[in-house]
Amino acid sequence: MDLIGELRSINRVGFGLRHTNRTLSRIIEEKKIVASEISYDHKNTIYNLGSHHSSAPPSVSDLPFKVTISNTFGFYVPEWAASYKEIKIIRTIDLGSHM
Image (tube, rainbow, N blue to C red; front, side):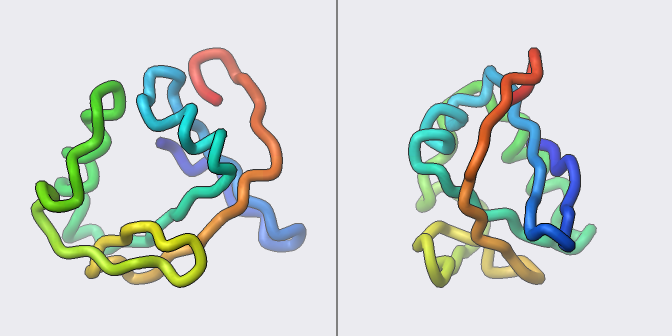
């Protein structure tokens, strides 16, 4: 997933998810997502998780780290996340290779 940008003045965030991402249809269906801010120390862990975007995501019990539960949506968040945002999806656009 790519964070395209945050427009704080209008309270909007843009993301780009590849069509090959197996969770894309579920994200669009649920109309919500959680984005975490992490330190550089965890870069490799995040890249390893992202490298499987076209396969089934690992179960929470198989993750190499502990998680907490987000306040509003009840999504899993790495316990070492510096912060996170729970985001309601209000619009999707097909951009070719990404949605």
